Length: 136
View 1: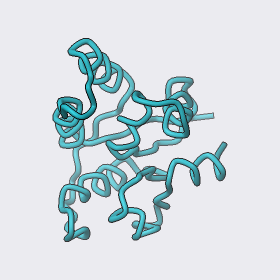
View 2: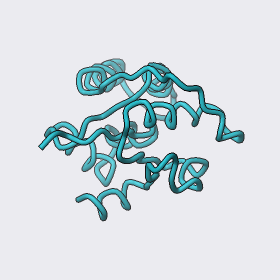
View 3: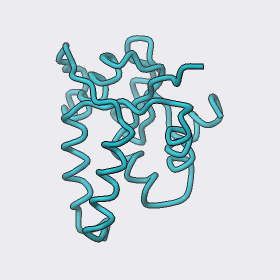
């Protein structure tokens, strides 16, 4: 069966690398080929900025490793349509754009602005826990 495209918010990706738990379980499913991780170029750039946050206390090697793994497994999509739905945090719109472009079956996020939407263009927006409960 063809892997289903999924968009993980940057906070889920960082959590997958930083701690054991639901985000890591989802990322492991991606590494096993059960899902295709899809993201836009903007999100990849955001991820490169986020790994630099001092509070994450990542070594240079860890930062490079996270970006290298994500680049190796992610399908980078270029959004054809600009979305301006999330006014409170406009950067969140790039997640919606990538999901629409990738024809994702699901968005996984820990971001309240996105989770409040619940569904976008027929694409459910779930927490990591909800995703695992629904899709294993």
